Image (cartoon, rainbow, N blue to C red):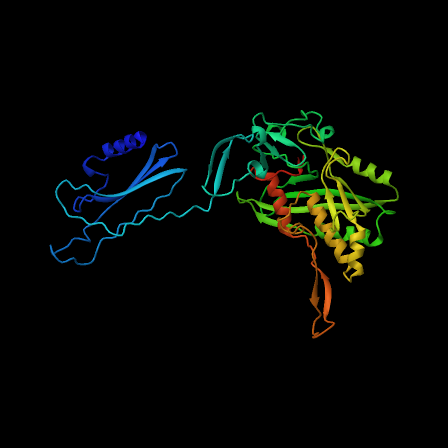
Length: 427
């Protein structure tokens, strides 16, 4: 406790005889004081409140109101300790009575905080006592600290922040041949977050004025085998493409620029898989890092093998499928729902809207079409119907909203967010 004693002594030296800055010389030198110490018992802050003349008693024997009310509030900015006391430090004799002294601690809504160097190495961290350990840390990824390895689980690969490199080769190495396959975020973690290898193309044009807004065009092509998809599925793809292309987002950014976000999506069918794969592989462009990125995607009709009840999925990027460019439609699950009376077209259109949203970089929780984790089916009541037989099945349709495009572009432009799509500035 000698460390605390020395710190208290240094505080007393700083306010000799109770002389604080800005004291009221007409009132007694009596205070409520709060001293803040860090975890190592270093004095980091001091706050006090002096009494006033409000509580001065006119009778030496009869206590009379009003009484003075002392209140002092401080904000604790780091883990540590507080030393709270009341004192009468007046240089001459003055009777002062303190009563009902209460200390209230209001916990911060923030239960933990961490600060990082750019490549993810922690340099300061704090956590409220008595809470569960927070393991979702840098970029929201789970820290794997077994055997003191201190690596982050990004799903497909593990990241080692001490050296700023992945532990495994990039599954999309062939697309970024000019970069080391272990590099993290093209060696620029301030601007990029290497999350899951999403592909697509965004072009940018415009000056930002009202008549010439900064226009982002999100481009992607979708190909399918006409002998694989059902007519309903092919029609739903075209409807979904139309849903995106007819949706525009217009707003002002933080700098006051006028911004417009548009889609340029297309869908085309071939009568064999070879032609589909060739079209997907041909839709590539040279990105700003000198590598090849894709905006061609494939949609296939398949069965779920009873592994899921979902109606479709956007398959994550791998070296086998050339990146995140494969959307699967699970016809067996769709037909089960149709058998129970649900509208097939509503299910497929909502599913394609949702999975294209993922394909373009959307996450669950973003604005629709990806807000929820799957397409919801339910039962409602027929209009003007009462009693038995009034229940009817309905599909909670997933629509393309203007806010979705804005969310995707903000992930590209704002360093604090996730960079999913590869951006190509228009010449």
